[in-house]
Amino acid sequence: MRTGSEYFDPVLLELGNAPQARADLSVFEDSNTQAPGKYRVDILLNNQFIETREVDFTLVKDASGNQSLQPCLNQGELEQLGVKVAAFPGLAKEGCSDISAAIPQASTAFRFSQQQLNFSIPQAALARQARGYVPPEQWDQGIHALLANYSFSGSNSRATHGDANSNNSYFLNLRSGLNIGPWRLRNYSTWARDNEGSDKWSSINTYLQRDIVALRSQLTLGDSASPSEVFDSVPFRGGQLVSDEEMLPDSMKGYSPVVRGIAKSNAQVTVRQNGYVIYQSYVSPGAFEINDLYSTSGSGDLAVTVSEADGSEQNFIVPFASVPVLQREGALKYSLTGGHYRSSDNSVDETAFAQGTAIYGLPWG
Image (cartoon, rainbow, N blue to C red; front, side, top):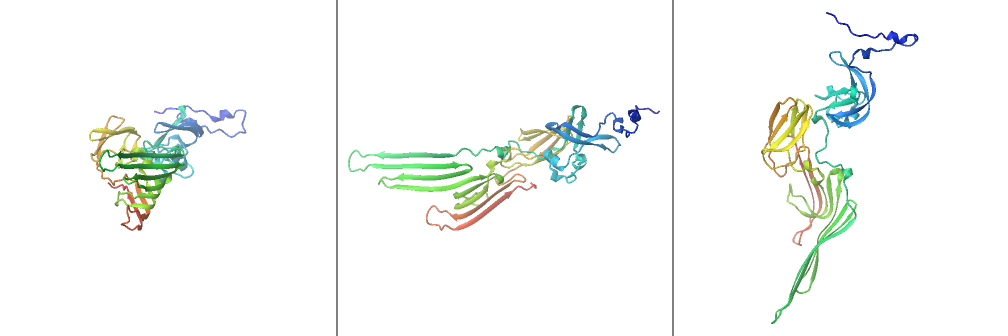
């Protein structure tokens, strides 16, 4: 049995205008297809609104021969959406990228009636910021300031009879500093007066310090001590550049394993440790990666549950144990120290030395 379909003869548009070229209306023969071109649309990434802008759409035929409008985005435009373009060489640097072919389980959906373009991209294919991340541009160096913390103690005893002597002793603990922009000047000194009335000033240490934001590190010049993660701590006078974990979001401090899995649909991911829920989030279909778990107790495997949209569940275990020097996958902790050994007395030579340490988190357990 044959069925007919509605057809509009484009010749009817040429009545009275015979010299003009015949209009191509083939794109409208499918009721679900619109004309290619530029449309101003709301861009959504995994159903989350990103921005509104013009996007160029082209007609693309699928394997069944059906035509549909597909966005024409190059590698740079996808990178602006947060896609890890370096991991997908199939994305075109110029021209239109076939997202569904280049990124496994990725797709696009253009809702023409709502002028919405939704990208469904697996979470593992997206570059995302850790929980609690604050851009360095929003960091505040503070105000210029002169500061001092001190404590003072003393005793005064006076003899009331006999040949006993009066005793007077005093002690001052002084920590002073100067803040100018990113620079911090600090000094720790003490003063003491004994029973015989002699005074003694002691400068325990003086140093100049500042943040190196690009390296997430601290630069120290003057008197300090080397880190103790690899070697014993050594007092020195010189310079030191050391990574500073305090510049990281709380969710990236300490050690925690990376949780990887694959969601079959829009799913809820729940992570439990020792029976307690420590993480819960939602991911789009495809591979996902959770690398910003807060550091927890040093032992207790992670139980992961992936709850799919159809009610089914996936359950698996991520082994977990920690020792003090462990680093997260891809994290680097380092120190570079150079100067002279600083002795508390004159019994040890002030020997020149240099020291470097590095601890890197590898992806293999």
